[in-house]
Image (cartoon, rainbow, N blue to C red; front, side, top):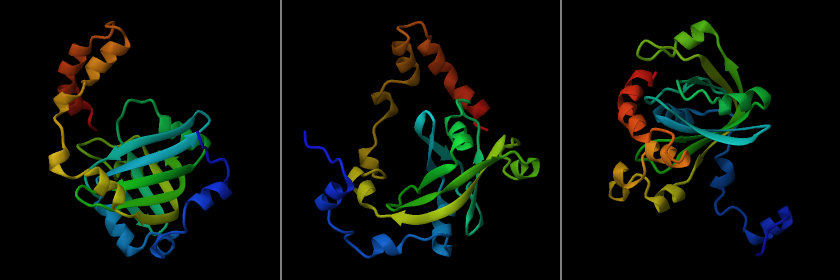
Length: 204
């Protein structure tokens, strides 16, 4: 097995960036065009790092759920989840974050690199209320770099192509997976039956 073990070896393997745009696109603030992309996105991936390692977690809500407070600041509500708190634990110990925004049907993604803190300000949390429920905390992200990523990965994967979609029934359900992990001690069928109603009750 041939392994790359140095930056010099890595750079020798790959050419310089194909297009000047690869460097021109990187800004230290959110431009009007980049803002339009962020505000149109209903989904992002949040990457954090902490003592236990790296975590990558999905975040989603109606488009505009990430608020652009100013050219250097994003506000992200922390909606209800499973309370593992992997991302939030990491941010408490290491504020570095990386965001990847996606928009259904759009090939480009938008990347944001910055530092985050967790706010529990009552007024701020209340301003993100959905269906009568406010988030317990808000991530305040100070932007250090922001730039779009080209379409190649989404084109190759055909992510938005309806023809590539498969029915959910083609893969094991969450209950089936949990039942297998626990060798049947976890009641997977009961979990699956209860989930649709639980989702409605706990979405916010």
